[in-house]
Image (cartoon, rainbow, N blue to C red):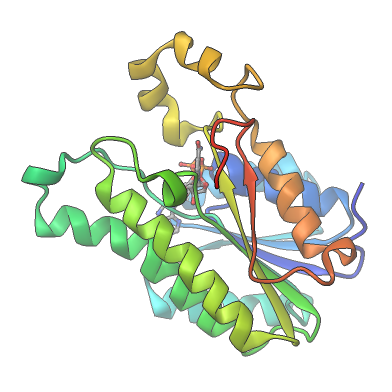
Length: 247
Ligand SMILES: NC(=O)c1ccc[n+]([C@@H]2O[C@H](COP(=O)([O-])OP(=O)(O)OC[C@H]3O[C@@H](n4cnc5c(N)ncnc54)[C@H](O)[C@@H]3O)[C@@H](O)[C@H]2O)c1
């Protein structure tokens, strides 16, 4: 188990499969967690599951593409918990749009939700983050392999998240470490339609012969935030059961 006592995390996309698992991992480790998501009701429900007494979590409706929402969330974090040690950016969308008919609006929506959002929250958070703090951005296997068909915008955003992560890791060292995780296929609402389309045979193509769980990803994130990763910055941990072995 990870020891995050006296630490404060802000996570985006906290109502989703991975965001919620991250909140759970950190609360279990003793942290206070600000759970933000555009879907307020689902975040309330997630927080009740993670922290039934509500003593260790703060729920905030935050559209990660809206700088005013981000401002409010950081202020609430500072008022409630007095500091911010860790930031995890898990909010994203995964829409299927064939490239040759993709509209400007479809392209922009994914760029905004998956890439602009990461820039906005990192920029604001680092102004208040504790020295020795850590950021983990959630990228994707798609950043390394290219997105699956109909996901050119998604793949582009995730590759952008990786380059952004490496760049700000240099800028923010030695004060704040910045890393990424690249999940393979993880069993969450985001990929349920995609999995229906690809069927159970897909699982046999994964060397570990199973889909990833949100907790598989949350534990890699917790490692990157924790003391054991104190000399690790600007890098990416792949969490994909061996489905992609990079050069
Ligand atoms: N599930 C997978 O197989 C997989 C694979 C690779 C990467 N990822 C990445 O992991 C992260 C978490 O995904 P997940 O699988 O938990 O998906 P999910 O759909 O369960 O969760 C995503 C959450 O982000 C929220 N969100 C979307 N747009 C938002 C916005 N503008 N502002 C605030 N919140 C917003 C949604 O409401 C949702 O709760 C994402 O960055 C995703 O791209 C997932």
